[in-house]
Image 1 (cartoon, rainbow, N blue to C red):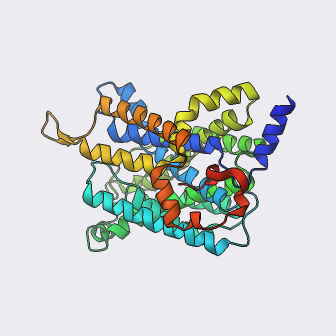
Image 2: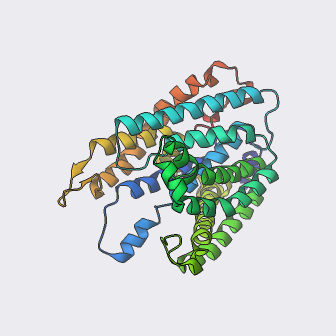
Length: 380
């Protein structure tokens, strides 16, 4: 009992070390993306609805854990003071590299899925000046923006002027921020919420209970209301129902972020806050998924390479990469690779390159002490 109390107390004093539950939640998000990308169409409505759970929630959970990672790498509950400029520079360099990797993947591999890396890089650049705002400011700003940004994006997606702009010379910029499948105006509010949670101590029992309750409430209230509204309306087709387009978009996003908060809270609860035997069993069972979450760039980019090599012409003459076998292979292969690499090497290969390129390995990070390779909570 004393050991459990001391472990939970130590978890709450962890200013910059990895938190297994955050990595596990990120790993779950990666698996959800695999399902969204590769799961084939099925005839059963029930199975289709189950697969549809992976359409939006994984990428929002991914953004949430990215915000938490940014908070952890910049000091968590004790924000760094003396090297803020250096940290901003390193994160900005990582953002530019992610943007470049995303554009290269799109140009060279041409996967059949929508790549998030370029938008991820842009979102990181937007977050750079916001890294050290107070926790409650980050949470309040994230919450307010999350209520309005999806509505604005839904209207922008249907606006003829912006649609024309998205097809023009600057179309990629319009897609990044407004009309794309993963617009930055939605990602940044979710990242701000994650940043605020890290500042409050994302692994503290009282904080976990608070955002778990918030997540359950958001999901239980917003998702059923959104489901009762018509979907995929055309703006102007029925002016009396146009208001439902932005409202449904905001309700769905808030509810899906609520699901992400529940997943994050659950992962931390069983890997950090649970009693010793439960914590050890859960950590062992989740270790392959947690390992995936420690190297998201490697796993996500590797998935894109596999998908680009798996393209084929289906029976209907349409190029596809959907396959149950490929899905199982991606999930199992990623877990095995990540677990072995983390156990015997450490950081993921692309994470090591990203860290070195940003200059983080060249500085004497005395605040990390003896934590070594586990201190890079911001390997996102």
